[in-house]
Image 1 (spheres, rainbow, N blue to C red):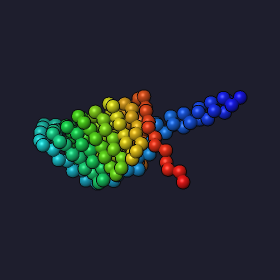
Image 2 (cartoon, helix red, strand yellow; image 1 turned 180 degrees about the vertical axis):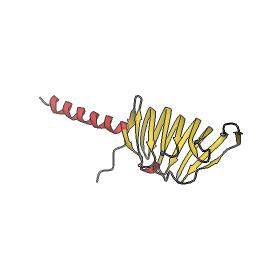
Image 3 (spheres, rainbow, N blue to C red; image 1 turned 120 degrees about the vertical axis):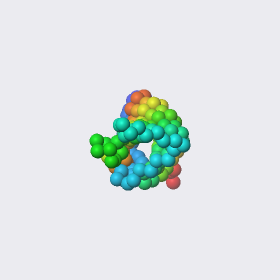
Image 4 (cartoon, rainbow, N blue to C red; image 1 turned 45 degrees about the vertical axis):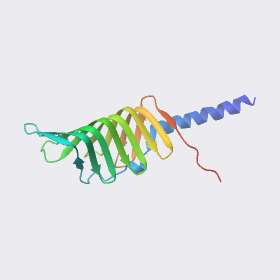
Length: 161
């Protein structure tokens, strides 16, 4: 009979862990999505016909406290071509803000919506905690997100006093 309470406790712990592994708070990744976007890179190619811009080599995008690094970033402008609509990043993508950091193969940042979508071997670190999966979306306005695709998490227990 001692087996039943232990099994119930284990089931509850696994259910709670699964919920934490999918819906995650990213307080460090909250940023002012209306702030200016600064882009630096080794080179820039601009195509006047469609207004496309491609930054390559050590690309760094800064918006408020958020930093996005990648090997290559394509800039997609809005219909009026005066504002950036999306940034398509590829190759060693890293998003850092505060103590939160995320890595992936690719990322798409929808500037007006304040949404970042990371795909391909996504790894998130929040202090000592680690979360991995294949796809992650982050809402920069609210600092919340979701991880999908065979999610794995390593949570460090807090100190007890």
